Length: 173
Ligand SMILES: [Zn+2]
Image (cartoon, rainbow, N blue to C red; front, side, top):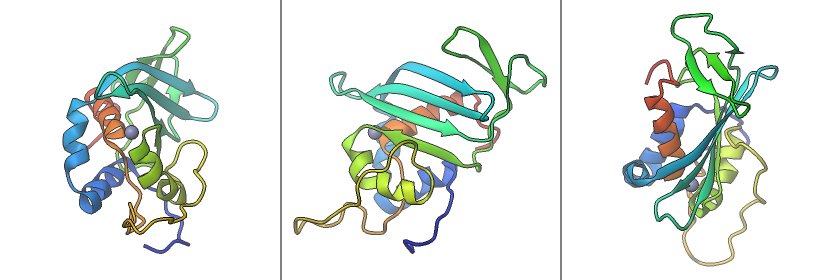
């Protein structure tokens, strides 16, 4: 993959690239991730829906995981039958049309797997939510953690996406 090409990336490709380049472990391990304090933060004006969760597998190391959707039309009432409802931080209910799993998404997670392996390359693909880490500088003889420079997601992010799939946030997958 060329460094200079900026591509946007969707939810489906983030997960399938992770599997293709790094094996099926993350998808498998995502089943053991516990999610709590899930917050749905709508920005009606900017058409952005930010979902934040505390994620953990051990109960002791807790990470902050984000999945952020762009171009989402968020309303205060169910204008169409297939709209999905969520409760915002204010306690109000909001409605939106399920997002296409092929549409752009941004993600982030505070775990080391995400930070060291994926954040820089997700950023290059406009799929990183938040600030990019400094460019990776190789200091040891250990192999590169992401030799193909491919974007991807950690097990926590996969777990949050799976939760949103179950909540019918996506129109197809
Ligand atoms: Zn993570």
